[in-house]
Image (cartoon, rainbow, N blue to C red):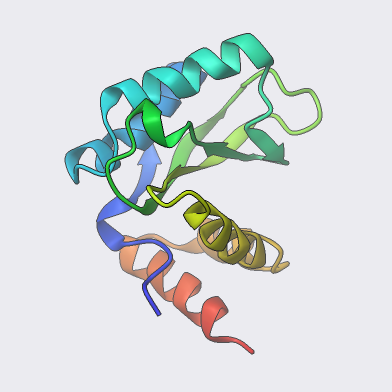
Length: 150
């Protein structure tokens, strides 16, 4: 099975000014790996400004994503852990500490990615284990361990 999150798409202790900066910084590894364009991140922000902070879908977690045609170049999920949580304007789920950036080229490809991600996030100790991790390798091991559970 392909790794859910590649190590080069994980960032720890990232400092940001606000939620917009958080979107750009969390997407930077995907831009660098040519999985998305900067326009993709511009679209995430534009959509959030127009429709509200729906991307903050659970406490402390945002899922940064846009349409394939907005600049998706490949499939991948990045994880950025912020040093200091930031407000996105979602009263129920702010502040955000974890940002997952999703890119998919396949029309329904994001569904498999989302199913795997939801499974990961539904594990009660996932965020506790991620919060204790001090290296990217430790985070990847947490993800691999949880994905390997039956």
